[in-house]
Length: 306
Image (cartoon, rainbow, N blue to C red; front, side, top):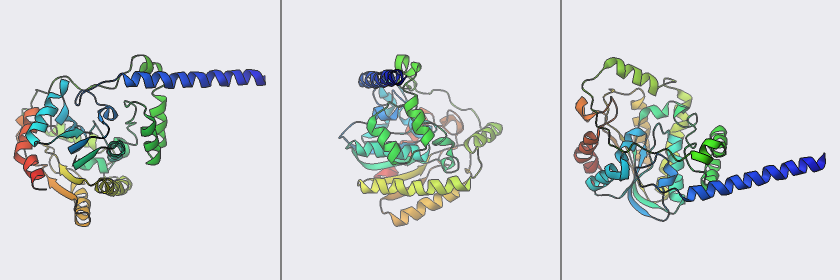
C-alpha cells in the first residue's frame, strides 16, 4: 500500500512538473503588440523607459484598442509621449496596483502614471477581489510571488494557478485578444433608462463603506509605490454621460488630501468635459474620435502643465 501511494505521488509530481514545463514553453511563444491583447502581463517589458503609464478600466483600455496597435500609436503621437497601457476591462484598484508593481519590478521606469479614475471602483470588491482578474494572464513565478506578497485575495491566487492546468488553457487557450477594429458606432441620444441600468451595474453594493475604507488605503499605497520610483501620478475622472457619479465627491476629497501630502500627485475632473452623445459609443465610453478630441483639448494640456 505504501509503495502504491508513493508511485501515485511520484506520478502526480511528474505530471505537475510536465505541466509547468509545457506552460512555460508555450508562454515563451506568445508575441503580442501593445493593443493586441487584454493580458496585461504580456504587455509589460523589461528594463525600458516610458513617458507615461496608463491605468484604469475600459475607459483607459480603449486608448489602445485596435489590431497592430494603431489606436495606441495615434494616442502616443498626440500626447507626444511613449506610453504603456496597463488598464483592463472592469479593473479594480488592487488589480491595477498589482500590474504597476510588476511593471516596476521588471526594471521599468516612467515619468508619469496616469490613472483614469472611476469613482465606482472604490465602492465594491466586484472589480478585483471578486473579478478573478488573473485568469487570463500567463502564469509567471514572479507575478505569483507578487500576488502573494501584496496579499491578493486567496481565491484569486488559487484560481490564477488552477486556470492554467485545465484543458482549455493548455491545449487551446491564448490570452484574450482585444478587438481588431476600432469601435465605430456612436450614441445618438442619452437614454435615461440605460443610464439607470448602467449605474446599477457599476454600483452593485451601493456606496459600501467598508470597501471605500479598503480602497482609500489602496490609493495611498499606489501613490507611495509610484513616488518611491520617481514617478508623478495623475488622477483624472474620464468624460461620461452618466452625470455626477455616486461617491465621486468623497473620492475627490481623498485624492485632494493626498495631493496636499504628496507633491507628485495631481488631480483633474474631466467627467463633464463632453456632453455630446455623438462623441460616445455608449453612455460612458468615448468613441475613437472622442478619445482623440479629449486628448487634444484636455489631457495633453493637463499633462504638459505638470
